[in-house]
Amino acid sequence: MIIHSEILANAFWMDHNNDLCSAPLQVDGTVDDDNMIYVEEWQCMNELSEAQHEELDKIIKIFS
Image 1 (cartoon, helix red, strand yellow):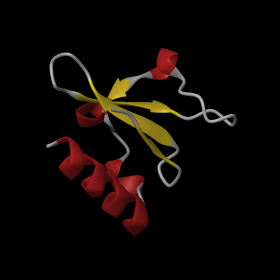
Image 2 (image 1 turned 135 degrees about the vertical axis):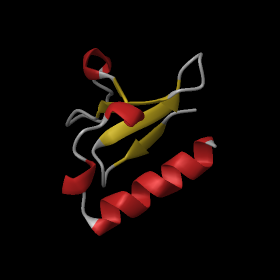
Image 3 (image 1 turned 180 degrees about the horizontal axis):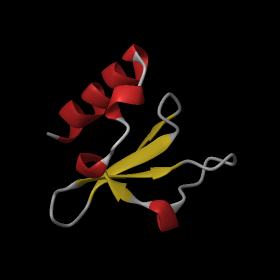
């Protein structure tokens, strides 16, 4: 399963080790796999808006 989030401008999925991954969404809606990063490695959490934090929390719960 892959979740596309317009609010976060990223796609989210679980890898084969059950780690939550993300990658930017391109303008055409495709996923930029070359820039995949694990959500746990995000360094910009304090820059997210309240709506973005809520969206990320929902996504994490879906995959939990």
